Amino acid sequence: MSTVAWLSVAVFLCAYTLIATEKVHRVAAALGGAGIMLLVHATDASAAFYSASSGIDWNVIFLLLGMMVIVGVLRRTGVFEYLAIWAAKRARGRPYRLMVLLVVITAGASALLDNVTTVLLVAPMTLLVCRRLELPVAPYLIAEAMASNIGGAATLIGDPPNIIIASRSGLTFNDFLVHMAPMVVVLMAVFVVLCRVLFRRAFRYDAGRAAEIMALDEREAIVDRRLLWQSLAVLAVVLAAFVLHPVLHYEPSVVAILGAGILVAVTSVTTEEAIADVEWPTLVFFAGLFVMVGALVNTGVMGQIATAATDATEGRLELATMGLLWVSGVLSAIVDNIPYVAAMAPIVSELVAANGGTGPAQVLWWALAFGADLGGNATAVGAAANVVVLGIAARNGTPISFWQFTKYGLIVTPITIALCVPYLWFRYL
Image (cartoon, rainbow, N blue to C red; front, top):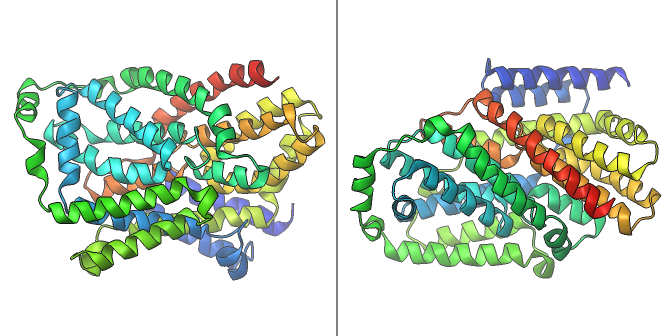
C-alpha cells in the first residue's frame, strides 16, 4: 500500500478508537477524521462530496432528514403517546411481553419500510412507554435497533445494503423475499429468546404502574386530530412510494424530502417547529463517517482487503460463501455496512461471474447480504439504525454508550451469523 493509504488507515483507526472509548464526542471524532483524510489527500472534495462509491451517501442523509421532519410533525399530534399506551396495555404492563411486542413490530415494519424509518417511528413510542412503566430505556432501544437490522434483511428495501446489492446484482424484490425472508423469521425467533436472557435485569414488573396503564384511555392522548390525519396521509403516501420504488423509480431520499416538504406546506406547523426535532448531530456524524470510509475506498484499502479475502477462497464456492459471510460480518461491524457493501459489491459481482454467474453462484450475494445486515448489529456504528437510535436516546436525556450497545451486539451477531451457515450450506451448497 502507498504512504497515503497507510495514513488513511491510521486516521480511521484513531478516529474509531476515540468513538469507541468516547474520549471525544463521536461527531467531533468523525468530523476530525474526515478533515484529516482531506488534509493528507486520502480523498478530495470531488470524491468526498460527489462520488457514488467513495463519498457521502446523500441518499442516506436526505432519507434520514426527510423522515426526521415527518416524525417530528407526527410527535406533535400525541400519536406516540397513544401507541405507547396501546402497546403497554396489550402487554398488560409485563416488561418482557412489551419487549417482544416492540421488537416483533420493529422487525416487521423494517421489512416493509426500511430499518432507519422504522426506528425513527418506534423509538419515540418506546421512550414514552418505558417512562410510563418506569423501565430502563436503553435495553428496549438496543433490542429494537437489532430487531430492525434483522427484520430489514428480509427484503430489498428493508436495509440500505440490500438496495446496493440489488442494484449491482439485478436481483428483484421477490428474490430477496424468497431467499432472505425465511431465514429472517428463524433469526427473529432466536432473537426473541436471546432478549429474555440478555436483558433480564431490565424486566422489573411494577404492578402499581401496570394498573395505572391499564386504566388509561389511549384515545385521550391525541391532542390534534386534524394534524394527525394530515400527517398519516402524507406518511402513507411516502411509505407506498417506498414499496413501489421498482415501479416509480424515485429514490427513497427523494420521496422522504418531498413528503416532509408537503407536510410542512399543508399543515399549520412552522418550518422552525418542523426542523426542531431533526437529529443534526446524527446527520453530521454520518457525513464524517462516510468521508472517512470513502477515503479507505479511494486509497484502495477496502479493495485490497476484499481482494485478499477473495483470493483466500482459492476459487472454491463453498469456501468463498462462508468466508464472505463471516468477513462481511466482521468488517460491517467496523466500517458501517453501507459503505462496506458499496466497496464489496463489485468484487462479489466478479466472483459470481467467475463461478458461472447464475444458479449456485448467486449464494454469494445472499452471503454478503446476511453478513453485512447482521454484522451491523455488532457495534454501535455498524448500521445506520444503530446510530439513529443512539442519537434519539442522547437527545432525550438517556444516552447509550458505544460499549453499552456493543457488549450485546458482540453476542447477538455471532449467534445470528452462525445460524446462517447451515441455511446457506444446505439450501445452496
